[in-house]
Length: 238
Image (cartoon, rainbow, N blue to C red):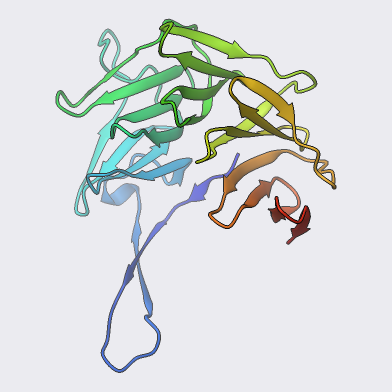
């Protein structure tokens, strides 16, 4: 799993007349500044400008000056079920979804609390995204699930030949790209899952995946670093 190691570095661009390049300035934030833990597992800046940081000791919301920490609270159903936060996602309705060690939570901005919209067993949720139809997809216990909004059901998407799904990301054309723990890429479109025939094989886990605007698939692997695969020319670069 990819992690952002603290001290967190927030970069601010500083403009100076007469300079051709803009220098970067960094400020370090640590536990002493209010952060719940110095190892950040997930990070997100939402549409309101808040920066959300998931750690093993709670979820942090940073407003530019102060941290607010959300933790599991026993006997309070509107708190997180677990302090271990693995992933964060904001959907098109500006709703923030939180993947934790014990399932998925939805943040209610009006009430400043969390809802648990799906009836599911406790287990790790490690990656979340949504498709162009608004269906929410996530990885639960290394398997791919989605919420069928029309049927109002949580369904598992079985992918033949893939034992562990490690990461997912949305394709703006309508599909979902997924990476597996054994280095394979899967494309899901209209509920049909196909193992994408890469001209090379990664013998390690895919930890991150992203489709760029120029039709290139960026693949982050656990041992081979970052790879760029051109879907049009079927060529890769490192």
